[in-house]
Amino acid sequence: ITSDNGSEFAGLHTSLQEVVNVYFTHPYASWERGTSENQHKITRRFLPKGQPLEAICDRQCLRIQNWMNDYPRKQLGYQTPHDLFIREYHKERKGEPVVKSVSA
Image (cartoon, rainbow, N blue to C red):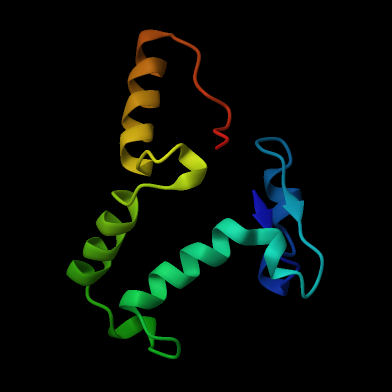
């Protein structure tokens, strides 16, 4: 997991250190989190900055989630997150090795 140094992530490393590696970016270095910054940009297509999240209905949230999960990503070799998840899930169920990371 890659995170910024915001106070909301203060306990992240401690709570997840036994499960996954946690990396923190440098302050004011948003380019170190390129993928998450791109996700924010995509989200802003649907939710303008400043719009209260409480105003979003479950149906709209699900529509955004589905759109994002069905959008091909360069860092996934132009696969969709949904397709990659399903493929890896089936591999795991069959006892095959599961991919640790995907690089373009």
